[in-house]
Image: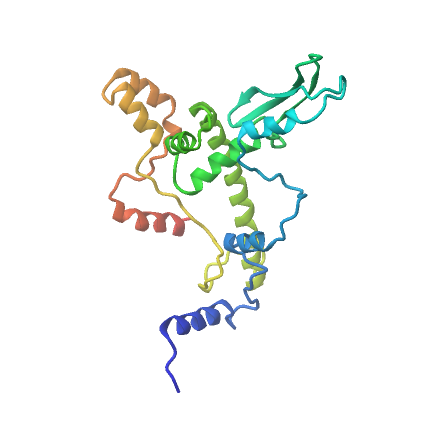
Length: 267
């Protein structure tokens, strides 16, 4: 009998751990919060011309203008329509369609709609989120826009988008973690007022608890460089935002894991 490859043997062992007899539940693709599964579902979705969610494309503005030049004005019926860019909010523009013959404003529409509950265009949030997901910041967005000949949004707009995304991520993480806690209690048949202190470890993607350790604060680093770390201006600035500083670990990088574990076990 041929010997199983190491990776095949590891996969079989992972399946056994995920479906353990000690817990009255079996982890499947339907009940885990795995972003890779959502990506697979998105890629397997049949693409149609109409979609409930807006699809973003990169288009040369001159090509769109040529298309409207071949259409007739609804008032004077002449092929004198002209498309022009209006107000700009980050990557979102207002497209103004006018007639150069009768000077009639045919219509005006925004290239990106706003998310419900805030005044930031959807495309701005998506750009900030996309570069954040690959570990890049505003300077990378500027380089990307320079390469594709697109005007970027300001650093102030970027900071506003990051704050909104941070709030949304926090709410989503709390919601997801509460759902995971309910699933764990359900699996171990534990009442809500009794803590579960011992659970089996499996490869199901559940995050029971976490702690973020950080040795660097980007805002403080920028302020130190611009104001001077030993200046009185920096001391006044730092006192006003001490509670917002991201630094919560002052030891070595190798001791971060131990410090985080201690915080988790003391909760």
